[in-house]
Image (cartoon, rainbow, N blue to C red):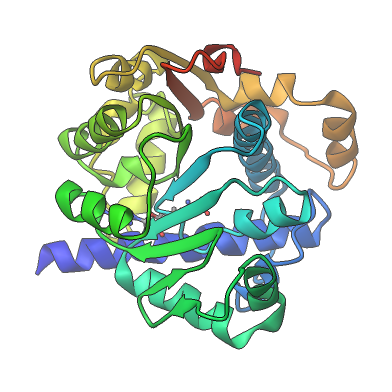
Length: 318
Ligand code: SAM
């Protein structure tokens, strides 16, 4: 069916993210010794503006994630929604920033691939075993559950199934929780992503949601981005919610979140630590500065908080 074809195209997007991240790390934009185990090869060359865009994305998301984990003194949970082949668990372990539990959710077929890689590559499995207290570690084809890391196969559009599975793996609604979606909500219809965001606000009294995705999609450049994805059968079903920074914030403010903020990636790029930005700008020559600006203006990070425990989550920003 059409749904199967487009879902399959959406699932394949995790390979794009991984390949681009691997290429950028191979050039030295940031360090990730784990991503090589998830990408088949370094792949073909990516343009410098693409690498800088991924740099801004990874640094921007990590900035808020790490700030939340530090604010809660690691007494928290993280749920990476549509995590794909993301390697954040291993980075947090190496940086002594592991939360009480790090959850990931993606389609069962994507999860099965990720778990297969973990099972067959000791550099990936060792850190999971090291952070687990008993001999019994659940690791089957479709889920992994250890003391600090849990991977679940589920469709994010089916909220009751998602909720049930997370609870089965000891999700604790009382703990401060960071939810992350990086290039994921845009593949769902506005009502499906609103339901997900609403579920999160209903489930946790103290939480932060960090969403990275396209924005300002109604101009010519945005239309070209949409056409490029459509050529690969990939529908951006949620593009209506990506019209502006205000529409990004609205999604949260309408569904029970107390506070929301959003910045485009050009702005974030200009407030990231500028000594490191200067370092990466020396890695590759970029001829067309305007192209980078246009690209960065079409992605954003939106973050929302609710804070019954008064931890000061609304102050987390750039
Ligand atoms: N967040 C990862 C990253 O940034 O590296 C992966 C991004 S990839 C562009 C989008 C991911 O979202 C894919 O792994 C896809 O399978 C997942 N995804 C999209 N819609 C989903 C849904 N309805 N249920 C579960 N996963 C979904």
